[in-house]
Amino acid sequence: MLLETLVVGPLGVNCYILGCEQTGEAVIIDPGENPERIKECLHRLNLKPLYLLITHGHFDHTGGLKELKKMTDSIICIHREDVFLLCDGDVHAGFYGFTIDKPPDADRLLEDGEEIQMGKYIIKVIHTPGHSPGGVSYYIEGSVFVGDILFSGSIGRTDLPGGDYNLLLNSVKTRLFTLPPNTIVYTGHGPHTTIDREIKENPFFINNY
Image (cartoon, rainbow, N blue to C red; front, side, top):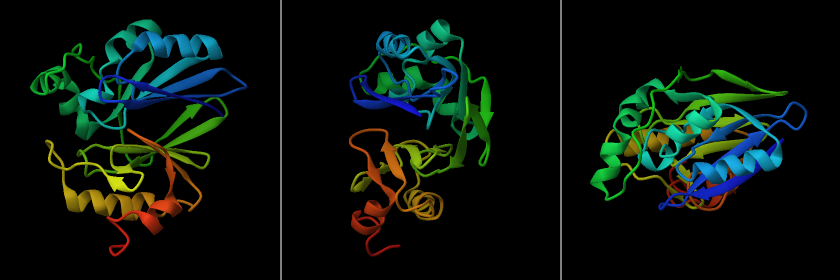
């Protein structure tokens, strides 16, 4: 599997481009900003994006959707419980002093357990609420892309609309920590980690798992 990471936007969101080396099909996870950079990366790798996969609806993860939708005509996917965040992304951005285009409507509303085909690869949707009601993680071949629910040595904030601290902890423990220990965790901000490392070293779970 091809994997490229671009850090985009003023809040440093990790945007991931996944591609099938055989078919050239690709997905883009959390295109938070800088659509031209993302397009250049796709061109360099000779990839055709089929889906724009959103881990959660916060504006810093959706700011590039409008332009990328125009450029690629890819299918925008988000969990149904985060549609309200997607729809008001430009308004929420304004509360924090940022400006983004109003995100387009989603084309596909995801449910827990769904599978998304990308060439020879299958991406599994795991509903992981807590940072937001409709937060999801995307699992593919020993890697999981978790958005802002889990970080290296930390967790996502729960003081935003729809956040729930206890639900977040439960999602991580029951949905993510049950994945194979060597699974690589690709986070929404900052460095990647592993499931095993977070079980053993994350201070939010050392005495609570």
